[in-house]
Image (tube, rainbow, N blue to C red; front, side):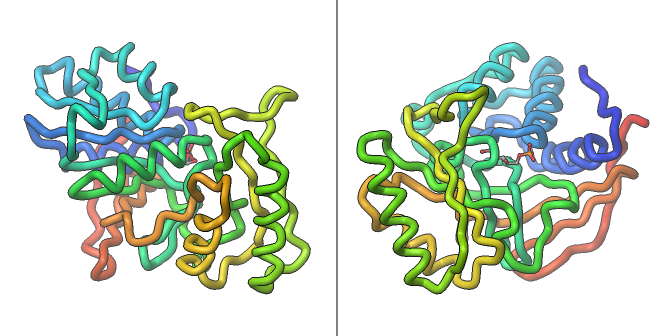
Length: 250
Ligand code: 5RP
């Protein structure tokens, strides 16, 4: 079992541990992608090794590989049909539980899995909490065919919506274009501040070639914010619940 060593990792671990309390035997779970979700998968693996019976749908090949190593039973989303709970990280979240996701490039599967769940719970350290979404570059997944045309249409749309001097960059990895698990490219939109997340999401999704955006609107049911000392804040649809604590290895 891995142990968190930095304050940020302890905060992510705390949030992941708090989310583990939501898991019940027999559940069908969606498991997210990224460094915070990886703590959840790690902790879940330990519970499975101790006899917890759950089945999981991973949101990326990376998470699937981690779950396999930990012998966590996996099924496809089509086999599951519907999920009880999805636990995933985020790049930004606001007080209305709207998110930017996709920093790890898994936004499409993450959105499909989260949407097919009774409940989606975000786990995060407090650095992801924002008053307004958009400081984190918004990932937009586009099909490879004609991607430059899609990029031009995205640029025209955001200019028409009043965003100025927006840099749009095709995501790169190790000197080559980043390709998602579904075989697409990602355009990162450096918007600075998003004034109408819902309108932007709808408009971007209408552009031919755009598969999905990292704007998760009305999808998350709660955010568990972890701190290095084990404190947990839970933000739900009706605001914040009482603070609680989980044990974090020091
Ligand atoms: C991957 C995601 C991640 O959940 C998001 O990028 C947060 O990652 P991390 O927990 O490593 O900060 O959306 O596509």
